[in-house]
Image (cartoon, rainbow, N blue to C red; front, side):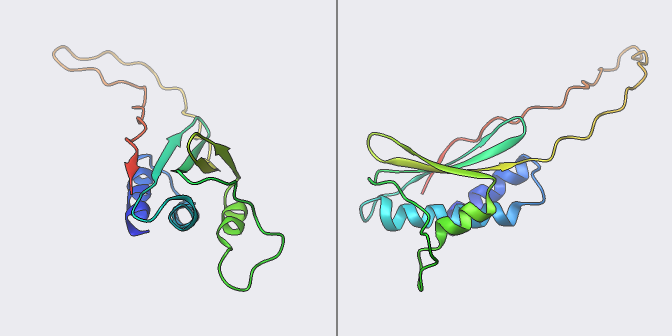
Length: 146
């Protein structure tokens, strides 16, 4: 899953998300692996999306396979632990049915931004360009297909 992980890492860096990168990348790997093993016919890909929200972000993996995945009650001897890892690392996760297929998602809370102390206004010298005090927003990246 190097392509999916690299895409997710770039998005997290663009969004300046820190602290949970390893958890997010592991969840991306597990969800992408599940999509390839169980969710798509051989030779077909899946759709990976990362979506920003005010206080969290979501990782979505869309595939064309049927069935709703679930976390096993007991840890299997070999394999089958992907959703257990996702359930343990993400703040929330779930499955949505689509036609065709499904989307498996997980969400991670982001730390609230520190409050910005009030600043005094100062006149802008003639000929200079005022700088905005509003931070730029980050648009959701285009979905990548793998």
